[in-house]
Image (cartoon, rainbow over all chains, first blue to last red; front, side, top):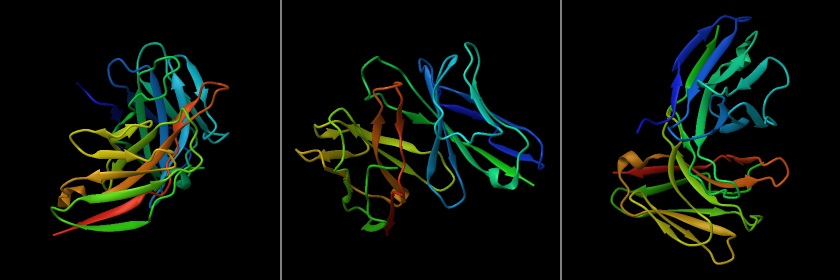
Length: 117
Length: 114
């Protein structure tokens, strides 16, 4: 079984450009999470999505950041007009969903490293 | 904010059991305890999770106290490759809105020494 796939693994952008990070969940998983890890810091929750719906975006910066999980295709984390402070590792995780059950296993991808120059 | 507290760092001798403690005194009745580890520059690796019963798999054992206010992750025979940051996480469940997420704390840096 393929795990959570993220691409690109490494991305370099100049200040002001856009960054698009993609995440393909594990087969059978309908829910996706995005986390950000700044250098030498822990993982910070950004957003929780199911297909065509954002469930929780409480950790997402209000400007320049957006996320989607379309009916077909991978989940996309989009960062517009990147700044140096956006340089970080962005991790995607996925889980299956069973209504009323919060004990599903959540698996993480290997991350996408964004460097803004 | 994370609902767990862990020691900042621990050491363990190779071949010995590593026992990593975690306090989660404000855990709610339907919230699971998850353990992940992260080796430098890699994605968090799932280890184990549980609600109230002790759990064991091929990687580790999870012992949860009866009052569920604390737990211990046990790596039975630590190897050098087990050196990593270990995160104990309570999966937060919000009844309104249906959000369920893992809130990471700072974790325990486990160093396995030869």
